[in-house]
Every structure is written in C-alpha cells, then in structure tokens.
Image (cartoon, rainbow, N blue to C red; front, side):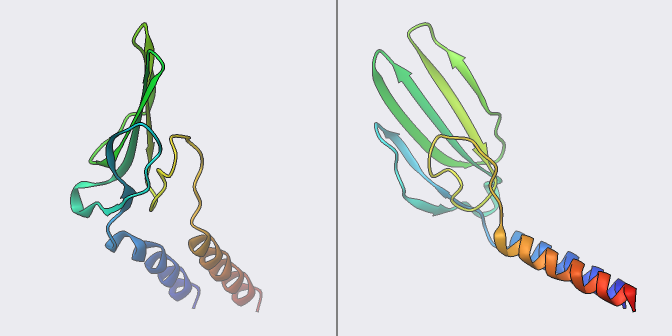
Length: 120
C-alpha cells in the first residue's frame, strides 16, 4: 500500500511539468513590466536582465533555455542577470526562493498518509 502512495506522490509532483512555464516578458522597459507569456518547450528559465548606466535603467525579461545569474560592472554602471524556474517568478529583478504551496501541501498530505498507514 505504501508503494501506491509513493507512486501517487511522484505522479502528482510531475503533473506541473506538462504545462509550459510562464514568464513575464518585455524588452528595454525603463520600469518593471508585467506581460505574461507561455514559454513553450524552449523556456526552462525566466530570465531578467537589469541594466543601469549613467543614471538610466533598463529591464529586459524573457524565456530562456539556460540562465546564469550574476552581476557585471561596466565601469559606468552594472548589468544584473536574475534566473528562476517557476511560473511568473520574474515579477521583479530580485532573486529569492519561490515555493509551490499546492505541491508542498500535497507532499505533506501524502507523507502523513504514508506515516499513518505504516503505523497500522
């Protein structure tokens, strides 16, 4: 019976991978933008690049097949790259941990069922 619960848990956690990642996208906006886009198969990451040079700021957001976060100093400004992998996670240029609360709740529920059935 426990094997069935483990199989159901694994299947439930994999369900979200069939839906394409959604990211906010825009090119060259001076302020934060909130235009959602389905990334399809090519988008594994939501990437945000924030440039700051001579007091001007630009924000570029897009779906990316790969992403390397970091900061580059240009001498007169900076280029900052932020990466994330959950739906609409690039709402701002800030990095941070993103949680899927339904997946966490489902996992906790299955864990409790497993513990209860093994105690019987």
